[in-house]
Image (cartoon, rainbow, N blue to C red; front, side, top):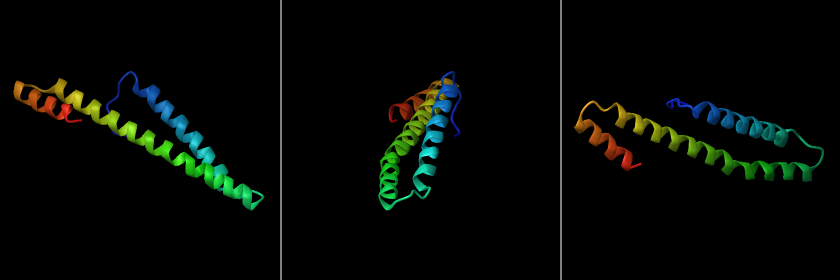
Length: 93
């Protein structure tokens, strides 16, 4: 996802993959035509409830990547001016 790798990143990536696989399994189960209209309605409702979880995970991942990049920029700054600018950008996160 274009994010810097750290010791925690592989574990976080595994967690995200497990969540996505779990969600994928639920999506497949939800869109597979059940036996009755009631079962289809329940499946659509379950899928609707999962949507905020997916959006929340994506939002957290994006924030994490942004912070990692900004901390790396502060660390990589080669002079005081560049470091101050990177710190200012980090504080605005």
